[in-house]
Length: 174
Image (cartoon, rainbow, N blue to C red; front, side, top):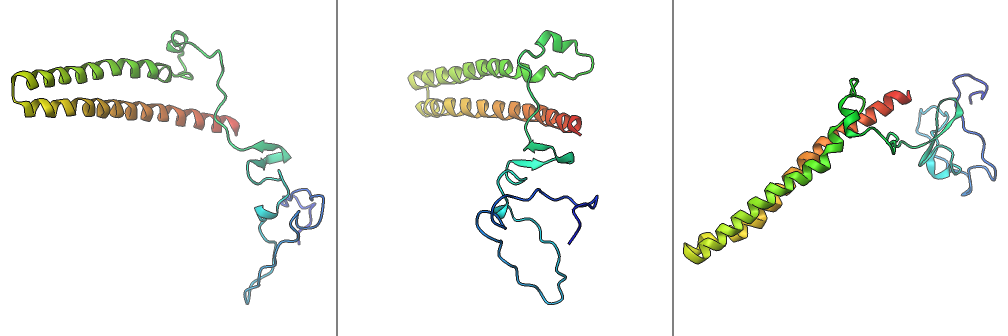
């Protein structure tokens, strides 16, 4: 057993109550032949509450930290105009514009689907009816596909910016 006063020894404070936690002592593990007895790793099922398992953890220097959270967002953050003149590129303009870009992308996609539907109705009246039926079925499917691809692309872009923010928060934390 190691001495708690050793500099390399990191132990948790003893829990109040019966030994082994509220469920009694932890079960004994059978020893393998030739195995060297030593300290067992802590078992989260028998740990006292809020002692480093689950959502809380003991950080360096005994400070308690609560899981990992995304970087804090400032409610009155920089506007788009101020972000454009940020010469250090600490604040990105693309995440602020993605909502506008998505809304603007929906306009031509919807107009194209409506145009296809209009041609479908024209073919149903004065042309091969099969072409009109195919276009009528295809118009909403094309709309859904284009909106989905636009959304996937923009989510990928936003994800790249979030990864960058999270890495910056990790770098600033250490």
